[in-house]
Length: 281
Ligand code: NAP
Image 1 (cartoon, rainbow, N blue to C red):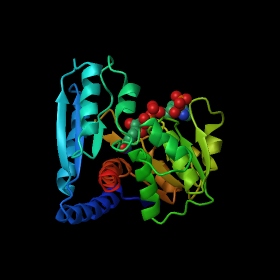
Image 2 (image 1 turned 90 degrees about the vertical axis):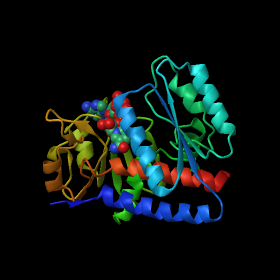
Image 3 (image 1 turned 120 degrees about the horizontal axis):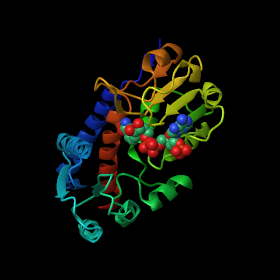
């Protein structure tokens, strides 16, 4: 039976480290501030934004909330972002996605100063990751690297298969695993022979976005399985992209849902915010 990678515990440890660092910086008169923008009132976004504000409060980061109505124009949003870009007391800017359809997400992402882009979505930060330079990295993949390292799982030289090639999970994940010297294969909806490829993975990272899709036939005995997916099943219970029980009987390590990758995303957002202040203020 696989050992559980406890994302709740690891994220709590990271938040504790950050809390201490923020207290030390505060004693030197340096206060860290994150601006959180939400447009409209999508219930899932409201929950995510609430959790981010709560994490800020816990760590000692000031959060400024901008709750804008659904009918906010792109121009209005861009002008708020420009104002926050210029504001020296704001170190991180987060614009909760998805945005209403009349607003172009790419334009909004590109408008955030790369120095305040704590989500790591700005093309300049993505480019930095590609060519191995320093920059902010998308929080979910960055959190997965922390899960692996803090669980003392060897990455270098291992075959890592990633299912999914989205801009926020699959692609940055592949680049980070490459940076850690894994041999990386990226799979997607057009991949042929998915199960065989997955079965050759030492580390299998699943971000397919389909509930309980990946079962034992995709997993090599002793592999490490990271489940990025998050869904509500027919009984309103949270589940991942992986069939947990089956996978756990083949894997050596596995992340549960909930309590695996999920809590790491916010911890890494907080980490990026503190870095933004240390580097650029
Ligand atoms: P996404 O944008 O929907 O991407 C899904 C990827 O899976 C795509 O690249 C798609 O291929 C691929 N795919 C779909 N069906 C496939 C199939 N049958 N075989 C092989 N590949 C297939 O999703 P995402 O934003 O990356 O998120 C993935 C999951 O992680 C979702 O469940 C999401 O809710 C969750 N998530 C969790 C967190 C967290 O903090 N825990 C953060 C972000 C996302 P194509 O590119 O060819 O379409």
